[in-house]
Length: 266
Image (cartoon, rainbow, N blue to C red; front, side, top):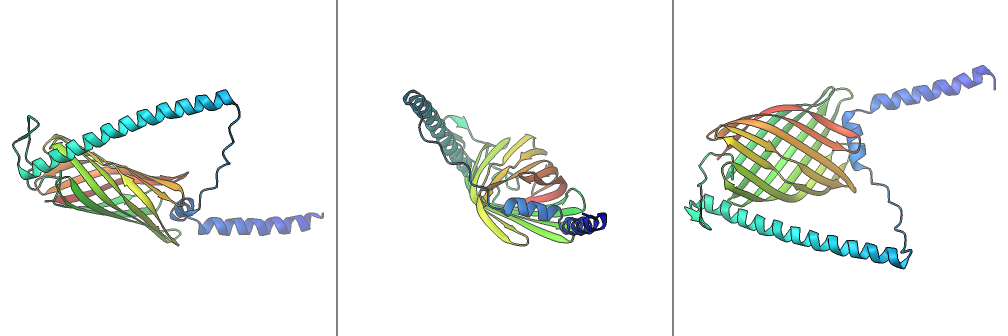
C-alpha cells in the first residue's frame, strides 16, 4: 500500500484515541471499573478420581467445622459485647463481676447522635466531600455516609452512598467495634447499587486522642469496592477534629488521598 494511504488511517486512529482519552477521567474510570459486570468464571470441573474426591470432601468438612466454631464464638462475643454496651448506656455498675464504666455524654463512643464532615484531596484535580450521620442507643445503631467526588478536567461528579445497620460493641471507653450490614449506591453517569458491610474500629489510648479504622466492602455488579479509612482525632466533649487518609478502590481504579474534618457527637 502507498505511504499516503497508510498515513491517513493511522492519523484517523490517532484522532479517535486522543478524543477517547480526553473524555475519560479519574471518576469515569472508577465508575466504569465498578459498574461493569464481572466476567463469568470458568465452569467447575466434575469429580475426577475416587481418592481425590474423598480428600476434598474431608478437607471441606474440616474447614466447615472450624468455620462453624469460629462463627459461634464470634456471635457469642458479639452478644456479650453488645450487652456491655447497653450496660454502659444504662449506668449499670457491674456485669459478670466486671466493673462497667458508664458512657459519658458527649463522648464519641456509642453516640446517641453523631455527625462527621470531611474534605478530601483526591489524586490529580479531584476533590471529595464526605458526610456521615449516625444515631442509635447502646448496641444498636444506624449510619448513613454520603461521598461526592468532583473532578475539574474533564468536569465530572461521582456519588458513593452507604447505609448500614450497626451492632455497636464498646465494653470500655478505650475500645469500640461496630459491625454493619446494609447497602451501597454508586451514581455517576449511571446508577448502580448493591450489598455493603463495614467494620469500624476505634481506639482511645487517651481521653483526648482517638484512632479510627473504618473499612467497608461493597458488592456492585459482582465487583467489590474496597473502602479503607484510617484517621486520628483530637477529642473534646461533644466534638472532635480529625485528619486521615482514605483509599477507595475497585480492581485497578482508585480514589485516594488525605482528608481533614470535624465531628460532633452527643
